[in-house]
Image 1 (cartoon, helix red, strand yellow):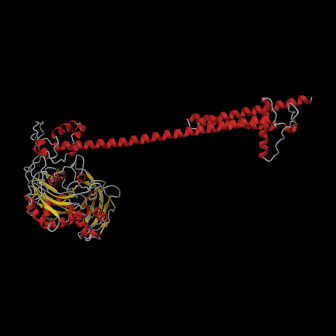
Image 2 (cartoon, one colour):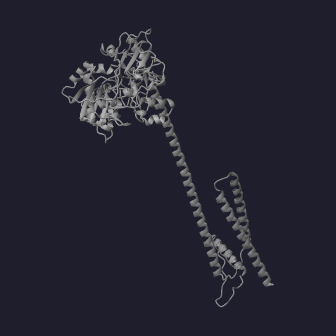
Image 3 (cartoon, helix red, strand yellow):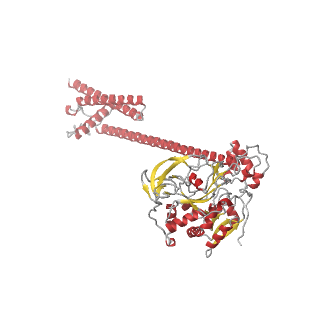
Length: 615
């Protein structure tokens, strides 16, 4: 006999399951229109890949997730796409979201399917791809993409695979009737998941209040290594962490996932969908939904197409509008009130309660907490609901998070036993939402700061590179000036100049010689020197500097100086980045003008001196 453990807390609310298990699963009638939400899973919403007016076949892909976590959506039946618009969707806030409206043609024609009955001959990645392409996400409530869940990290080997058939919440019997009538399909899907994961142990867990389901699953599992384990009825034994505790005695660490301790849980409906996707090539287009409550005369379970309006199912179950007090999607513990029955069935819809005022009366007014401690006694996660309530109500979210607020599974046990009628779970949900918003804003601020710091670092780097280039240009200019000075001194020494004036004249002659050499002219001959003479002889007329050429050079230098000065003034007025460069250019042109003026003055003095010596 399999050893079982117990979890802390828990309650025993009225089950109210017998009302909907008296009839077999009924196939829901085809509605006039199907409203198919594009967001039915955790992750990135799917994007429509069909256009209004386009005809599609049953099972044809109509929306796809091109980038990010998610699964595609398929046409539940053949028909024509009417439009894509924002319509009411199942959500506690009653929000609207993008939906694709499909008008059935009544033919229910399938598209081409690709079954793989010999899936064991395929690669595991190929089977996971087929599960993903079938649009399968967790059908137990969270809607996590199944192909991702079946691909745990390499360092986390799954040793125990659990099929969760506990279905502990009152009123809901979708899994119960599925196990009674579709046990073979469930086992087929479980075998496929076990083949992918290769666990050491494969368990089907069912509460002891479902004897028909236990018998059916036991027969279907004969001849396999699948264990059918009966667990005590206690809410919320169907919670993932609580069921793992019951079957293995292990606890999922705070903030962790079952794969961290080598365990994985899957839902009964998910197993059926996986089996159909691999063995029959059928994508997820329908699911079993419980319709119950005192306001319907024929409660039961319906196999409804995805996108079927809730109103249609209520009508088939014999809705009595006069007795209807409110509609609850999900169970009475974790479900929420629907604002309209026009919302569609989605992949995670498992139950709709059409409750009378006697059955689910309006909650009593909230009273002050009397600190009785009953909420802490029944909490299956062993949290401190009272302190979490105070911190959540006061907006002290950091303290609430420090008390492991996010470990709360929102089972509603604390609210159920509270004598002050405090909606504790609503406070916790609100606090979680605020914390997530703050974390998103903080993440956005951190990314903005990182971008700003990166920009500042880039600007500083560019400024440093600019300064380095300026220093290199200044160094090159200094070296060029030094070379010119050395050349001038060398030219003065070669020509025998003894004073500064002679040296400058020699420099002018050298410059004229280089210019004439470039233009093809002959360079003026240098003055001959005699080894025996102590002083240099006076230059001949052919050796004199060309005064007209010097005047032309002076005019060009002044013109260029004026141009550069004008450019500098404009740059300063516009606060341009090249002001420093222009200032250096103006200073350099000033030096050129001075040298040209000095060279012209020296040439004039030489001419006067030669004239006086001739006289």
